[in-house]
Amino acid sequence: MPHELLPSESAAPLPNTPRKIAIVVSQYNENITGKLRKGAITTLLQAGIADDDILVVHVPGAWELTYLTQQLIQKKDIRGVIALGAVIRGETTHDQHINRAVSMSLMQLSVDHGKPVAFGLLTVNNLEQAIQRSGGTVGNKGQEAADALLQCLRLSQSLA
Image (spheres, rainbow, N blue to C red):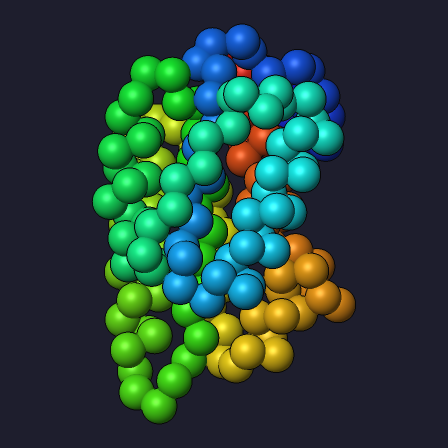
């Protein structure tokens, strides 16, 4: 029977170096992204990540998430990045273009640099959906992104 390594089984502590986890958060729709940021930070702190090892960088909007994520993921002292934003559908297809480009770029940065980039970009149809995904009935996608990043770091360490 093959050995399977599951995220829930990888409870080993995270390595000490590199130390920092970056959170890149869009200021656009700040009433939503602020809740995502708070959820991500709370999750990291509860996992034992020190305050000083969490770097939060604010960018104007979702489009800018990729540029700053790229800048941070190249740094030796950064072990992973959590990208947080909220794009709410409007009257045009603008949201679809932003969502697709940012999603693909963040994925490619993770692959290219061999470090996890957690996807916390809400791509919703309306404000109500954003509210429900930023601490409402559907949970907090900032918390989920932080948890996913931590699980990836632990799994990577287990494989090393």
